[in-house]
Length: 237
Image (cartoon, rainbow, N blue to C red; front, side, top):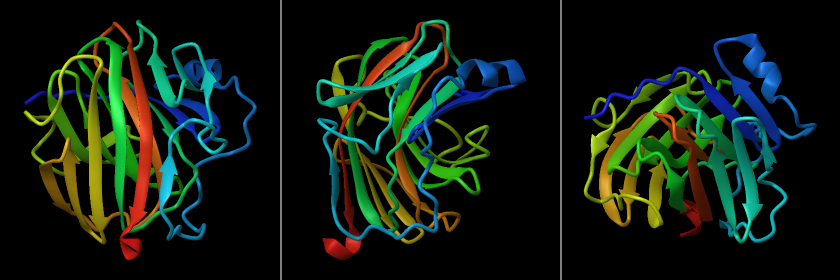
């Protein structure tokens, strides 16, 4: 088991690039974009039709560049890049959607950087309460399933006590991992490359936005590509 503590976070939130750090100067350094969008509010209507994002031409997943991270939509993927000197921080982008019970799936490919990393998806993002469920893998073969609070400055592992090793994860770089969550009310089942890696029963969040996520735990940076984020509401299946 790996114990990876998080000390700060960076946010690319459907059009808003925000740093949540330990000092105010860090926040000022990253607020360089003039975007008006934010996470979709929980009061927005729940989407009941299928959603498929191929990142070929999208206007809901916002992108931008900062001193320590960039999120760009290019060549049919959402590419997230973390600077080589950046570590122990989280970076994410939200899709501007609102889903409840559904099957969530995304393809994630770590392209280069430090192997001690984490990348994956977020569901049921509630910006009013600063909470969401996080499902991520690492390039050295670990999985984390948890609940993020306070914009992920607090994390509660929901499977095992922290990261846990799984042979379902394709390790290294240039290997695509397909992450899938089946969320039916409080019951959630998690899959990596069609292999079940965990089951959770948790009533904290019922609906919310979706997102993608990246982080590093040592200097060296990370470049990860996300593609084909698909959501199928259970009522539609």
